Image (cartoon, rainbow, N blue to C red; front, side):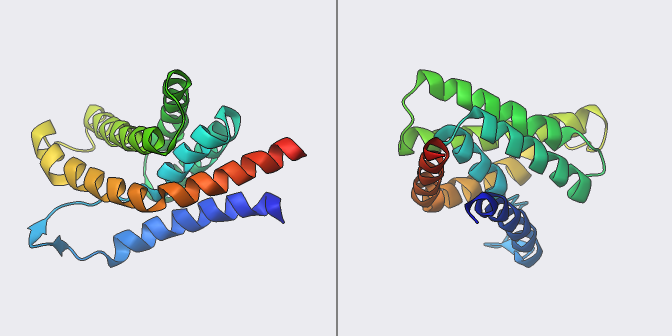
Length: 172
């Protein structure tokens, strides 16, 4: 049963992201902004930080590919960026101490890198013609604020869950 708990959690987060976008009002606080939730990616980053590189990159690749297949018309953007950023965050936290504060900051940095990476890939292949400043105001800042707030709320429960999972792996 324990083996299926983690994939179910990530699948639930994958679905919650979709529902969040579906039911978020078009104009939030009177402004037209694009809020992009990255709840799944935040959980993958916490998995990478508190369980290990191997588990984090495997889940990042699987759910990056799933994300590309379901939501994006170009396969490979999230499939590449999820594991790559997870690996970068893992390497960064090899230098720093892994605690809740550094995990929060690393998750916000990871979401920032993901957002900028997706914009740059879309800009390079001419999917978008939005300039960088317009992108920052329309999508980057609102998405970063949303994901930082969610990370603040879920950081401790995710840390606790993944530390328990890590202990269970070591016990086996």
